[in-house]
Image 1 (cartoon, rainbow, N blue to C red):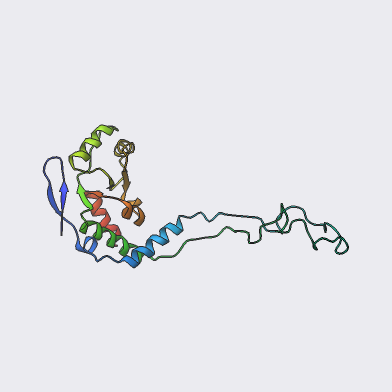
Image 2: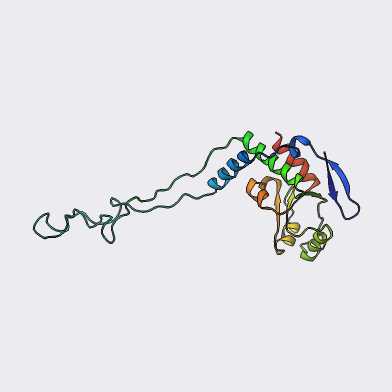
Length: 204
């Protein structure tokens, strides 16, 4: 398979492995992986006090009979103001297990679908001597890229600082790739070195 490498000098075709970018779209697998990723991102730290954890309430508020009121054993009952919560929430782990083989297969399926939809392009890695938003904006305009996720092989602080003030432009490394950010991206631009690294990581 080949993909067109966008360059400031002249565009050229580069070979990409069909084992990574030529897979069928597996919607059910991708859904499972996305749900797992989002569930793992939840804090699960919600905590409320039940009746046993609320301070006070050790003494019966009034006698059992003769008052004409409903029987009560504690002022910290969920029925009382200031009482505990009936079904108090507890810290919990929302994570759902997905093995590495399934995760990598889902990422391959997503990249393949992006390529089929012409949402995946290869670009030469921008070389910036210092952070300059105008330069990266000019480069993206030259490549006709407006809303794009840029994936590089390693963190380039000049590129990151140059692009962060431009709306709808994100810069991440191969290590930061996840199914949600790929699906949400309008277009994905990958540098040539990053393409090779992606092949190594998701074909391992």
